[in-house]
Image 1 (cartoon, rainbow, N blue to C red):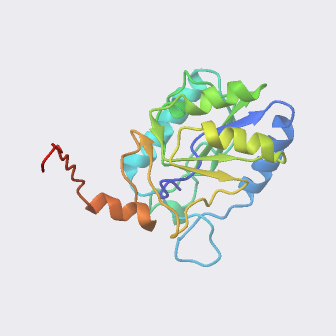
Image 2 (tube, rainbow, N blue to C red):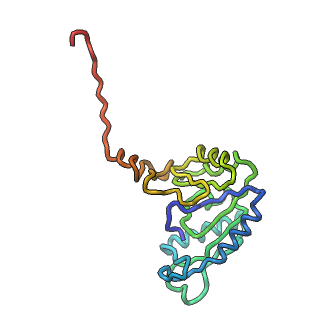
Image 3 (cartoon, rainbow, N blue to C red):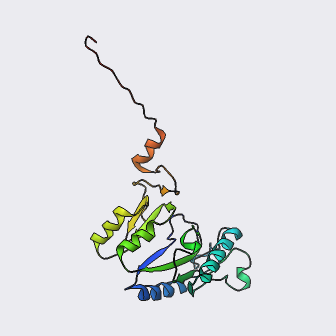
Length: 206
């Protein structure tokens, strides 16, 4: 629902598998159960605030006005049980492009915006066309392709065939406007250290 900083914000899908991917994504999204987040039978609780829900709705409206399509969701759930809390239906959008706010800004909402690509160079350019760079993900059966992307993606963490790249034993932090410095692991210790440079001029007789 947007409470996780490394949640997937933009999805670039190769055109050869885009239709099948969209169909499966919509099917899985439709199975998600919304309600009281403390209920063990519920998958998704409310959003954090009304301001965040409004931002999500505004971004969806902007995308639709510029040609995007709603494949599922896109609105608040109906019913008395959703009257208390900032609930919003998990949403899948298709036909996205970079003229839309959702592809330029962070959303922190339950939306999966899809944009199709035809070549890896194009996908890399689109993925890096962002002010942010906390985490990125690559899903492919070709490990050569996966490593090609991972080495070139402008993000502090890259997950290959996983959306859980963060582990306690590895450094965590972002690039660009996602922040400087690193948490966790040995790299985090360097954030608490001060470097000192000492230069000695040696002369004959000293």
